[in-house]
Length: 116
Image (cartoon, rainbow, N blue to C red):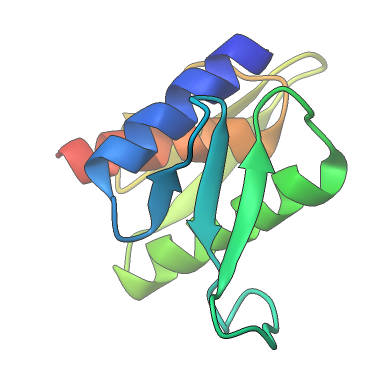
């Protein structure tokens, strides 16, 4: 899962460089904190996301960020859950690959939306 997450974050950094920037290492990313998602009291509103250390707080932050981006673009997002996998569907049919966590599924579908 870590490899998939790293690959998706790298794609997102390429497609939306104003929202996600790769740092000095290729598995560490700076993701812009949105005021609608999380309060920020710093002059540089960024959160570091490390794809090798998947923790629930990072995944929840990423999921909220993607949901907020979809709302800002007036794009619907929905999830289909099975016992093992989650699939995200954005904008009437842009569908993620089955993933272990909703945040990773949302990121997969959101990248497709950016490419579209």
